[in-house]
Length: 353
Image 1 (cartoon, rainbow, N blue to C red):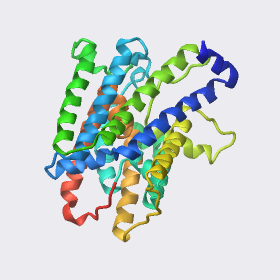
Image 2: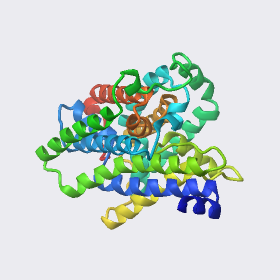
Image 3: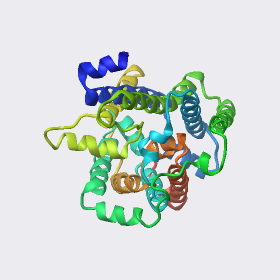
């Protein structure tokens, strides 16, 4: 009843934006304090190490699995209604886009979500890279690059007019998703113990995964009381970044979950950085990092839109509901990132992510 009263008071669109703001703020605070980053984990693994960055990523991923699958078992969320599951997925897009995104995040020294978090702390490299990412994502969605995205995505799509539910396709019981999440969490905690990661960082790493589940549950609840169709979605940065960019370029602007999410992540990361006294203007360290960052951001913009999501959108959010193309995209992001790191080797100027 409280949700109905909120929708009646401020409307469905503002309520969705508020839920995005809440989800994004939790995500931004947790991601900034935990140093969560897929690129960092991929680079670490490519260099033959299973250190703290991999442990943090695995803990975030497993936490998302546990919370989302647990919410489904409790009836708080139904993945069948999620936007990612309700439309056909693209296997070809997941492969090509995932490889492109993986290469791009290594070149740009951060995935799209990490760039937004770093931009809030005063990292000018991330500000410029993030803008390029958003522009290319918008071009891939409905601009000059959209025909190429459509052609590549149409090469191989899922059957039945929907994305593939991996648990159903493998004839596994629904509880197996929760069990897998718990198993990965145990592995992550063991790596954390070996790398002596402190409890606060572990809690914040888990908070990133919790934010993904929070977005799913909130938008699902809103869809059940709204008169107009509401997309059931959660944290992702490719589409929302493009959408938020257009809010500043078009009038009248449509404010929804996506816009609230981006604003929330920025605000949350800014608050966390200020609390930790980590606000600091940072620029580029020579021409090579600038060139790499621009190329990497462009690859992520097109690759993320083609793959159906970024390192968060496909890698964690889509993975948490066992969307087939999301798991394939995540795998290809790892392959693309590791290959790029090994090819670049010592020639790549490394900057902290």
